Structures are given as structure tokens and as C-alpha cells.
Image (cartoon, rainbow, N blue to C red; front, top):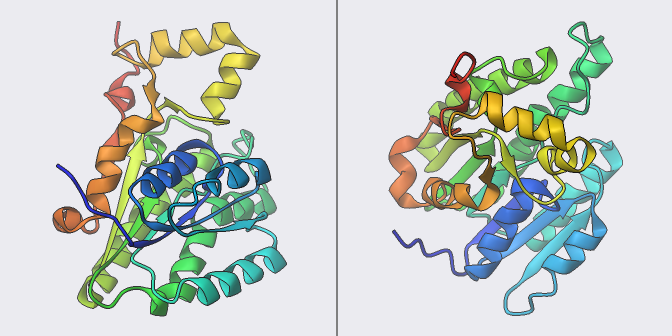
Length: 254
């Protein structure tokens, strides 16, 4: 199925690494007007080398309030209308202690839900009145306790947020969905770093946790992402789609 995103106005957070970077390249290739943001200046510069369509960018950590406010102001100035918002900002932040303190939990919440929720609130009036889409990239940890306590908790909350927001916004022609990827490799993501740091642990993860004995590439999620950002995916409003190649059921397989 071919989806036409030419001239669509698309905002993608967390788009300088991982799945966010893959999303940005995908929609740039499809001739959309794309606003990208993230912390890696070099990757933003590489994205903006494509001169065939409009690409806006913001470089900075959105968890820093002054950066966030500047980002929102810039988006409103440059994107008078937004057709699609894709939230790729997220991560476990290396916080693995099961007894996190309140500051650590708040940071995880802000990274994985809070910033996205505030963007949705502040940019609601920018969304296209005809039809618009909000896609939240979560994790299979949203439905299975396969990460740290804090990460599992905030990712589970994201599924509830997506469902609740979708129910409230569908009357305004805003389609809200979620995608819950399993393990995958992409530029600068956790599994690429693990492979470089500890190849034995990386191979053991594939052997013991992935029934297909294969870790996915980020590009494999693009057909689902394209669907969830198009009219054909409207029926999935409120859903968070698992895409993990059986990883979440793999605890005791041989």
C-alpha cells in the first residue's frame, strides 16, 4: 500500500537518533514538510542537506524548560498547520534501580510521556481541522514487564494515555495511536551501543529473548508507521500496536 505524504506538515520529536531519525528520513523522502528536533546537531545537519523540500529543525534537550518553550514558539511560527505529530522521544535513562526516588521517576515520566503530552496540549490548535494524526512510539515494555521498574511503569502509562486521548480527540478529527516496538537496531540506539560495548551480551540477548533469533531493523516499522499516520489507519484510533516478533512472549522458549 502506497501512502501519499507529499506536502504534509509533520513534526517528529526525538528525530536525531534511533527510530525517530528513521521516521524523519522516511517522510523527507516522501516530500513532506518535516520539523525535526533532537540533541544531536550533526544528525540534524545531515537531515537538512535534502534541499528538495522544507525541513525545519530545533537542536536541544526538551527536558530543559527554556529549550522547550523556545521549541514550541518556533514550531508555532514555522508550522501554521500540522497534519501529523510523531513522538519518538523516550528512553530508560539508565535508571535501573527498582526503588527510584521521586526525581528519577519524574524524569522518566517527562521523557516518555510528559513532554509529549505538553506538546499535544500546546499544539492542539495547530492541528489540521480536516484530519490529523498523533502517533506515540512506545515499547513492548508497555505490555510486558521486560525492562526496569521505572521504564515499564511509564511505558504502561503511555498506553492508557493514548487510549484516553484518542477517545477525547476523535470528535475533532484527531486520530491518536501508539506503536510498541520490540528490540531493534538503529543509529545510536541502545542495542547498537550494547553490540559495541559487549558483543557477547548482545548475542546472548538475541539467543535467549528473541524466538526468531533475529533482531529487527528500525526500517521494518515504517509500513506500520505510514499506516498509522494515514486515513487507512483511522480505524485503529486509540490502539497501541505491538510489533515485537513474539519477543514479549519469549521468556521460557527453547
